[in-house]
Length: 134
Image 1 (cartoon, rainbow, N blue to C red):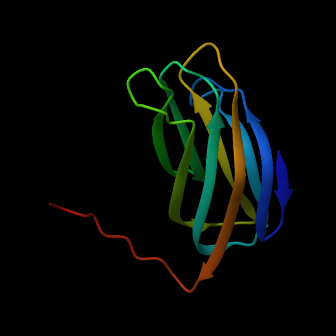
Image 2: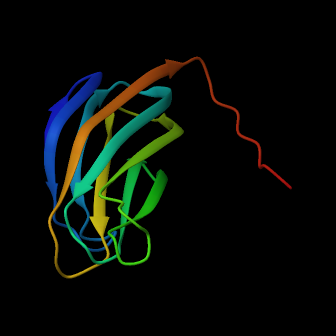
């Protein structure tokens, strides 16, 4: 796991978690002062497994999260051995806190890596949210 204060980059981290509850923390952006933020993250999952496996990565800040999933393997999805996971959210921290990226794969075997993970936070004046319809 990688840790830094305002922007973080992590070259490689193994993914070992198999559920959202046991997800592997890949990167943590620490010591964000209280305030409103927009937070972006990107990671790439890599494997050599042949069975189709659903890989999910999640960006979490407080109780807010965004997640992205991709099927990886060769059985029915073709040759998908690398997938990108773009993530973004807005969050208001009441006190100094952190944001983290975690990943998991829904299978009981395999070897998966998170590559080139990046997390960035931009402090905002305020945040207004509206439900999207349609």
